[in-house]
Image (tube, rainbow, N blue to C red):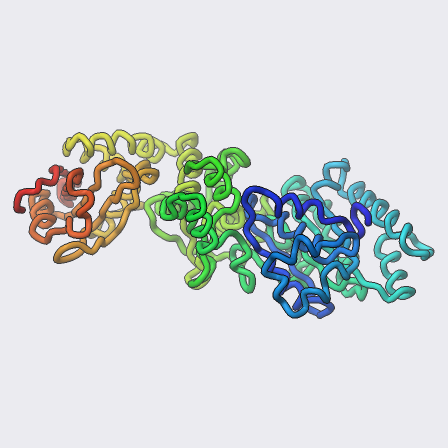
Length: 521
């Protein structure tokens, strides 16, 4: 049992023994299926706080000969697999956390030298081998030839070099070549499992590590349900802790990896359950300044598309050109693709569209924009709270004024129908996201209300009817005549009816607000 060669299971034990543990052990079914095959190379990239290191530690605890993990795994789902005992603590494992090595070095070459020396030192304690040209690769080759023993490589934070040496292309290439020489086409590798935030860096026309199956937030199959906490898993936790599941989804869900699987941010869910509150937990691990750097980039259309995203529109991107680093940006598509990998955007693989997934991420965007030089956009976001208070006060004139500001006097949300007007309403009321679920085309009475704000706390519910080049009286009358308040019976004692119209000639908004009355409408 060593630090790098055949480690113990203590790291996984601490996760397993924590107050909240979600069983992700069936990931092992997939890794078992790749053992000693040409497809034995797996690189899993996902955002911070999404459980990468926990999974890596689990694989170490399961495979490593340096420990007995029966007590840990016998109670987990993986124990039901037919090959469970066959692989449990039966493999030689080399576990490398690249961030730790990088922290101990002043350069990439020094880091690689440390890795070689540290792991070789442990190998030589176990194997009596001698090589003419000492290197980790040569020792492993010799061990395989003499002892016919292979190794499982678990490499965590594999991409830290690209996050800390962002501009040093030569150092990045040296590192990639080191990994290629260590792993590619080597018989001593029975499995290689790497985790990080970024997919594998490309340089030239090919990747140095093109033998890896890349699994990411852009292409998560075949392990989508292991990329975070699934809705089913979180629902069970919410029942156990008596926490509102719908509120949990509004804050931390929205990463729709396919039609069946949507995942939530594990760290945020756990902290929310432990604190018994909903808030932005990203701020404690990664400041919004890092997001600000990317959204302030001066690519044509980038800012306009971010405003569309804040207005609940989706934006089509081309994710295939992204170079998998944090500096090589040729277009806004590269920026958006990076934000997908960082967890700031969700990605729909079928439509190639990005979107803002949840309240936690919306707040990070809003904070970044408010501190940026975005002119009318920043002002409109700051005015959103005033708009909400004006709505509560039934001040239609003030509401119309704030919606004017939200329209931004730009072309990005040009009006041509009520649907376009609805996006401006979403943008204008963006600060209401913490208190409301906003529903487009809400089915009520004899039709569909344009926008309904359903409160999650003790705020008034709101039905908003939008008109384009008509009048607000018609909007309010339609709400009443078509009884859009059906389906909102529990809110009738605190319900606002809001009519908003845009006049294409005057280019002005008007607004009328009434409190719902139980008298016949």
